[in-house]
Length: 378
Ligand code: 9MR
Image (cartoon, rainbow, N blue to C red; front, side, top):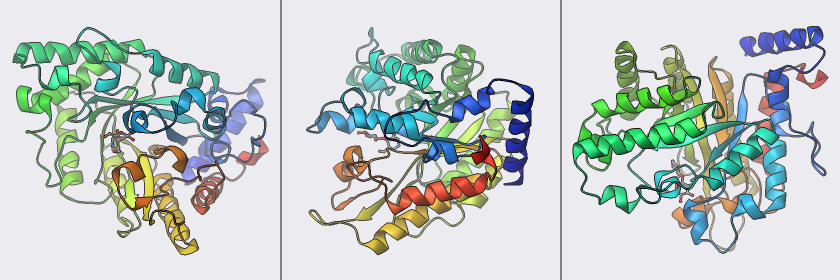
């Protein structure tokens, strides 16, 4: 926290010297939007060195739902997306099945639109993801390619996708969910590890780095909030890779939580041990689902519990020096993946369907404000 305050002071001091806003200042501020008070947003409350992000709804489960593409057609959604957040992550628009639908074609229009939106609204972008066992197209999974062909396909994909957005993506989830819960590598369901061996993980990072040397390159996973077999596996793997000169910059914790289970109280300690390796850390996909029977609403007690989970997760990140990015996996229940995947659970985001705020929203806002006193002078 101290570090954040002194950084805020440094930014203010530099603003005194420079007549125009510094890039750091500009990045946290959204252009004014009608109806949403600029000073009453998450990005305004956030300390200068912490990006507050959301997934941008599109692709994946949205394609099975009875509404048009949210990012393209829902203007209220776009207004909140621009006003509230300083970082955006494509929810599905960069996954292989979406962006690389046949071997010889790429579908970039949706991601191009997100990147353009982010630039117009002074937001950074997190790229998600290049190397995963899930949401791969059938042409890839069932292609019966030789090892040489597979290697060339992966290299071409990474260079093409990362290269297209070079300079425009702040952080990449290069490798997503590569470990099982017991800390063993996914040698069965991850096509790359199964066919090419674990060494291919290092190549994926090297190729991404070649294509965009400035982007920060991350591992990203779920179920690694606390100290456990899976997070231990990352703690062991990453220093081994770095010792070989592999360009790994960070470790990201998704944070798909449920009030059914206790809050992972060792989240901060876990982030800290990665920080102590000299890595950046991030929370990349947090949501907090609740048991809510169809046709009913959560109780006040449930909402308070949800708010406390969000707040404790954010406080953990704020307390760790190089935890620089905190992203929620969608900001409105209107488009959340949760009820589609978990029957009887939902209401996992910080805003209701009509974009009004839940206690969880106010809890995040409060923690962000407390993290950077003095920021309101801007
Ligand atoms: O939110 C995404 C949803 O729209 C997709 O249908 C789903 C398919 O698996 O993926 C969801 O996002 C996942 C993310 O990419 C990786 N971590 C887990 C997320 C929730 O499943």
